[in-house]
Image (cartoon, rainbow, N blue to C red; front, side):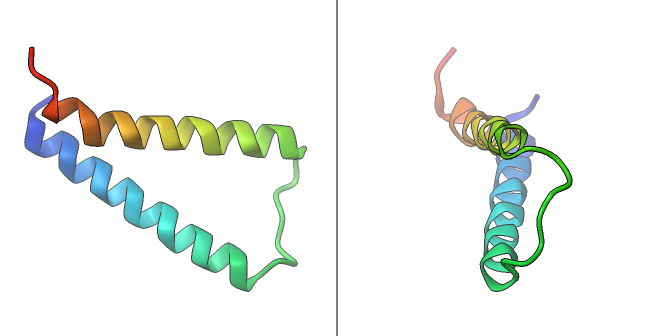
Length: 61
């Protein structure tokens, strides 16, 4: 994957995460239909993918 594409996808994912957090804080009555363990696992995977997409282009081969 090209560095610029990786950065763009990483930034878009970061923006989506920020918007989601803002929405979640304003609507505490909403929830997912599954267990909290699954929710936190999905959050962790999303965070790791975002970090990899933002940091990977800066690493030298």
